[in-house]
Amino acid sequence: MKNILKKVSILSLIILLLGCGNSSEPITRSKGLIESNDENINYIKTPITEKQEPFYQEQWALHYNKPFYDAYNINKNSHIHIEDYNKKYTGKKIKIAIIDAGFDTNHIEFKKNIIKTYNSRDESSTVKSDDISVGYHGTAVTGIIAANMNEKGVRGIAPDVELILIKLDLGGFLDDEDFLNAFNLAERAGADVINCSWGTGDVSEIVKLKINELASVGREGKGTIILFAAGNDGIEIGNDESAIDNVIGVGSTDEENLRSIYSNFGDKIDILAPGGFELGITTTYPNNKYIRAESAEPFVGTSASTPIVASLVCLLLEANPNLTRDQVQSIISLGADKIGSVKYLGGKNAYYGSGKVNFSKSLKIAETISL
Amino acid sequence: MIKSLYILFLSTTILFSDIKYYQESNETITTLTEIVLIQKSPPNAIRWYKNSKKTILGLKNNFFLSLNEPELKNIILNDFDLIVIKEYKKNIFLVQSKQNDPNLLTLINNINTKIGKLIAHPNFYKKVIKR
Image 1 (cartoon, one colour):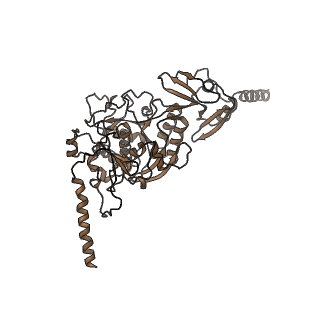
Image 2 (spheres, rainbow over the protein chains, first blue to last red):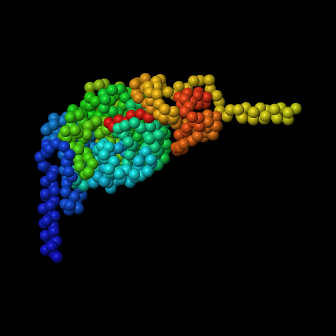
Image 3 (cartoon, each protein chain N blue to C red):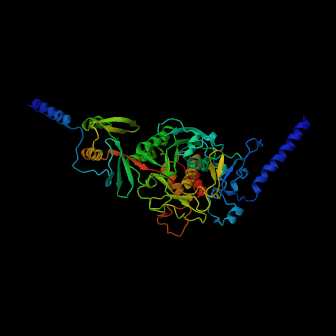
């Protein structure tokens, strides 16, 4: 018995050492989609850190990794400065609704986080994984927020968050009823946060009304926090969903830690987060695959920036569940880094909003606020 | 004498309240930015418009009522000959005219002008872009 135990411990040690080896591997330059690790490997039941995620080294938006930053000439402040807060907060007990299309509900990185799925068209709970025929957008957005620490691929920013996935048929024409249905379903499921990495450029009054109502009375009067991507056309946002006062309108920054040239702008832009330009945001792709930063067609844009800020909201609410929607918006603005050369008047400008998210500064503020 | 005056007052109130339960407004409420029909459609089908920003919008043959005063619901439904198709939480209703192929833009503007508030909203059909 003793011998068997001894053999098991030696074997464990060997496997552990082999596992640790992953974090110091040289940067891989392979392009395209990567299959996940072999699912049959028996992992040692030790606490998993993000360093054991095979693609963590290239998650440049999350952390500074000198070899990768040097290889791609990335400004060393381009990441979100989460520091050690990613150990302290993981989005526990926070419900986030992601309204999108192309969800792989069986993806190994976030399957266990899903508490509800809905189809906004018929209000059923049917969101099949074969819905990915419409693309990978929803899967990529979800992975940025919720990818688990499981040594399979990437680390999500809020890996313990509870997911409500609401399918909206993006890419074509939709009526205001579809939008209303989607927000109603998010409300019904008790979402604290709603991520919308899409937009119409011209929001209808009735949709604005519904969004404002949720932002005011959701979360038992504290206000649901709703985020919209500002868009990638390099134009003024005008009457877009992201321009609604009670919504957090999210723009994008690039590898140079400046506003991405494509990111829409205007007085109503609230905040920026990494969305990349030549490098994309490494995240999940349908069928247990990953889309990598250096892919030929990477996941780039304000669609990628928005879930980063939505994740920050989840962590803020975990740190301080009593925060109101107003307070969350203020904390994000107050913590933001004032990047770029455009002058900030009253803490804002029309290109950068309040600046680029800084997780540790905002979380520090949230922890110190007493209500 | 006092009794007669009281009866007169009551009957006047009832008479007027029978006519209108809501305050009419002389103000014109503009609910829609300038939109121009770009394509003829069969009756009751989606009509296609272009707005001042050149965005293409479809106008569905139903529309929304948002009512902060729920007591107005039945009155508006009766006065404008509407039926409720779907009821959303917090007093938002998807409604349709009982008339065949009405001019929805005119109907929506008439309701809002009559009530003096933006309560009728078109159900637009528009392009959504993944970002």
